[in-house]
Length: 174
Image (cartoon, rainbow, N blue to C red; front, side, top):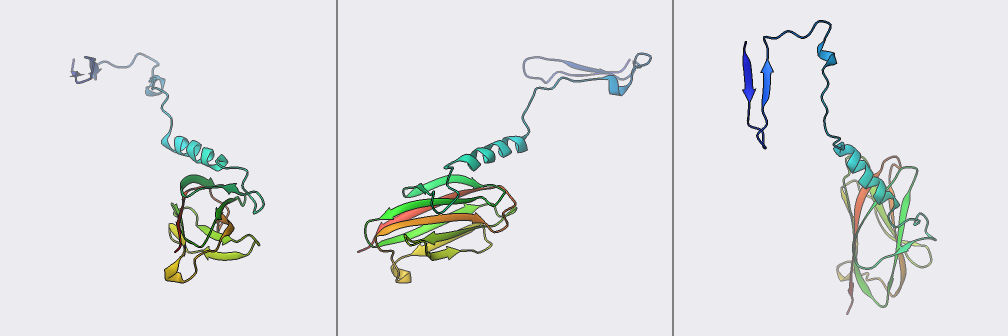
């Protein structure tokens, strides 16, 4: 009888394989079952996290229903069915501004628009890179004046769920 033993398990377990003993009559390899712990699939966990990000800051799907934000970074997601996310912030005086949108562009392309209080688009970033950015300041000779502004994050294709980080940096001008 050829027995191969394996005793390197943590906790002192032993595993023996006996290749000389035939299976019992009527048994087949398909009849051998193993109990494995219920380990969540990594894709399922990632999908659950993305689904949670889809609900973050909602409802903020229209220019009329933005979520007020402060400078810093937030994590959210654009979800299928033409979801768009709107955020608002207020400036008290001439301000230098950088808005950065970062995401994985392997499945979709996200873009940015910046609106003033009159609902006019004052800047946009619509490239195809994994980072979109709007910059307003002295180098562009166009600091933003006091007022309320809205940011729109939207998908160019509208057919994918995409997590993103949105960073708003503000520096009051001289």
